[in-house]
Length: 261
Ligand SMILES: *[C@@H]1O[C@H](CO)[C@@H](O)[C@H](O)[C@H]1NC(C)=O
Ligand SMILES: *[C@@H]1O[C@H](CO)[C@@H](O)[C@H](O)[C@H]1NC(C)=O
Ligand SMILES: *[C@@H]1O[C@H](CO)[C@@H](O)[C@H](O)[C@H]1NC(C)=O
Ligand SMILES: *[C@@H]1O[C@H](CO)[C@@H](O)[C@H](O)[C@H]1NC(C)=O
Image 1: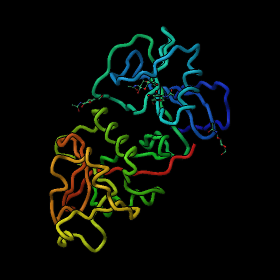
Image 2: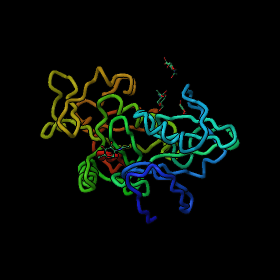
Image 3: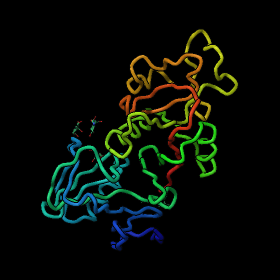
Image 4: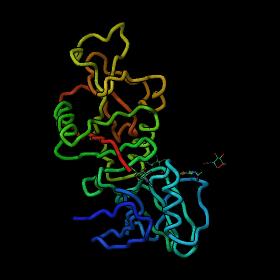
């Protein structure tokens, strides 16, 4: 998919990709329509539904709200619904909504065709990778080579975003498959006794994991893999809640990069 991004335009530039149409709004980013969502809406409860005159007005409202990452615009009822979370391909729950169109962001810094999803609130984009599955260190190298790292999910808004993305998108559902994130026991401490029996996990940026702040997002009882709980994962079979695990098999993983508007 070769796309030239229009820069610094507030004009409406509509063009058609194979399954997507888009209009340029600003700088290096574009709102892209996913036509597989035509006439569908999400069940996400929000109270940000409001009347607009045009699709562009809806896009501008989303753009003006940093916690908005996508939107539904209904071309019949002219209602605009801003969304915090992002839907890709098959969502786990949609409802029929005639006239509805769904838009999400793509950007030169985090290309949609490479599978990035964008969280403007934390200026981060994420890329869940299913294949090839890798060992944790190799996954971190791959993410590094792409200009980022494995996903660092604090502050909590980051964890909230990725968790909610996973539970909303069925393509990531696979009972046995886990996604590795940028959390591990400190370098040199793998498989060694937990200091004072207390988990000592850190994010790949060196920041210690705040177990209090992240508590609602951990599998009940976790971290519970003791000395061998070397890496952090999120698994559909555990409701995409955080868990610690040994690094003894190739797994799926989530890369992140900085998102620049
Ligand atoms: C576009 O980029 C400029 C300079 O980087 C920035 O000041 C401006 O806020 C950006 N505009 C939008 C709408 O993001
Ligand atoms: C709805 O909007 C009100 C007022 O802006 C806000 O206090 C409330 O938290 C919002 N509710 C939801 C579910 O977003
Ligand atoms: C900003 O967007 C979010 C959805 O991403 C929505 O819940 C919230 O109400 C919006 N805030 C304003 C002030 O429109
Ligand atoms: C489907 O998504 C909703 C949020 O839209 C979530 O609350 C629910 O847990 C998800 N269902 C499953 C089976 O994960």
